[in-house]
Length: 567
Image (tube, rainbow, N blue to C red; front, top):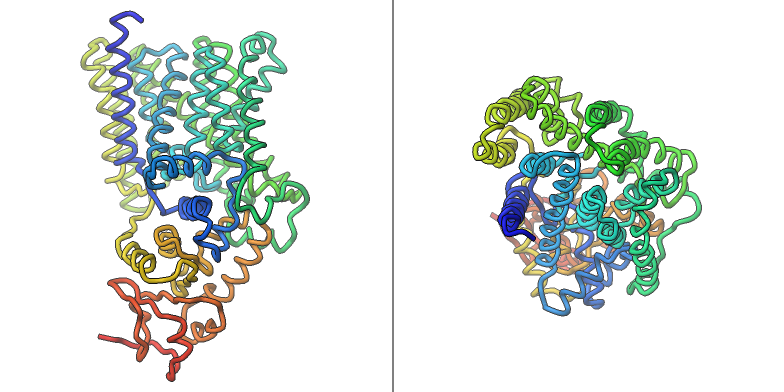
């Protein structure tokens, strides 16, 4: 390496670290125990210590057989005694940074300069939330999909840089973390290998790591501890299971959301196709394959999912969720429009650059890009104004300073950073605020004052996040909660059990009369919100949000359960 190349490399690393941290701490942000980690953490805790959560229906049915997510986390936890939270968040930061590097390499291979490539990658990592299929361009939580997606973008970047062995290693590691997320990448590789002789020559080294990863994954699946029920890969969904999924996991059934959302995804795909046509002379053979196949493949995943699940009723589809490949339609829409904008800036074409930047800046605000044109509230007006202002600022400023390397470099860094700080102030909320302190205090009390096999129920929690946070923090089992219902995609016996428990205890409005009907359940503690505290029955614990009752006290009470006050 030349000496002059070292500072550039250090600057690139520093820039990736800086923008990874901005994205993590500001926008699009991060969460923990507000989504799927509510499921994964209890599974990890039980795999690490089988004595815990033995009565929890989620923890005893791990769905991580076909991923190394659990092996990595548990191994590091046992080897170094690091908390699971630190292990998962560290991986989240690493794979976000690797994904940033992959996008940077992708754009660099399209003929842009280092600074221009960094700008497009930084805008890309403002993220996008695909509400229909419930998937994110930049995942907020440290879950397998987040790790695999970062690795897929790294593999794509290495592929267009013509480093097939490294691309194969990154893509194979993505398979090990979550096969469905990596499948679109390998599908494009296979298409190129089969139908393009020139592509085939360079792609052969890709398949060696994939073969090794596939064998490793198969062996790990056979050795998965704690499995009491295998995931169903063959056969058809029963009508009852289909009905439960319609109720709890609507995002899997594309007919429930595609009628409205598909038009925005078509608009994004058309923009990407238009940008591809403009950029075609600048693209290498590998880039051309990706630019055409990845966005189109994501779009076609919607009818593909419909046919497999809603027509053929294949039981494996809810676990694979093929429609989530739409994330690549959005991803390449952002990338291709961003690259086209920078070429327009190079030519001093401000208006054209502004047009290409509009979809790039629209996606962090709302993936339903057509809806953003319908302003019906003050919040939407603020978002519309900021969206237009950011696109205009970027096109005008970068065009004006493009010949001054220092000013251009400063603008390249300032505009994405400014967007990351301003977008949340416009009213865009990627995830709701959640005060975890009261539930963590409750979990701490339960961990210190109840048996490890104790079973809890939050009968007035509804769809709230509190029960799942409690289970993860306290390592105590729950009878049922809303978040755990997401597992109905994986195990039919769990789906039936969850549905029965949910209807029996949680469906509909809470009442003390309903609480009385729960006294025959094998629940040890009932947790109520303070507004629903009971008169004449002393709680075993209370704080600013919760009161906890021992089920024996409720059963032995000489008075009927009724709402009251202890003030």
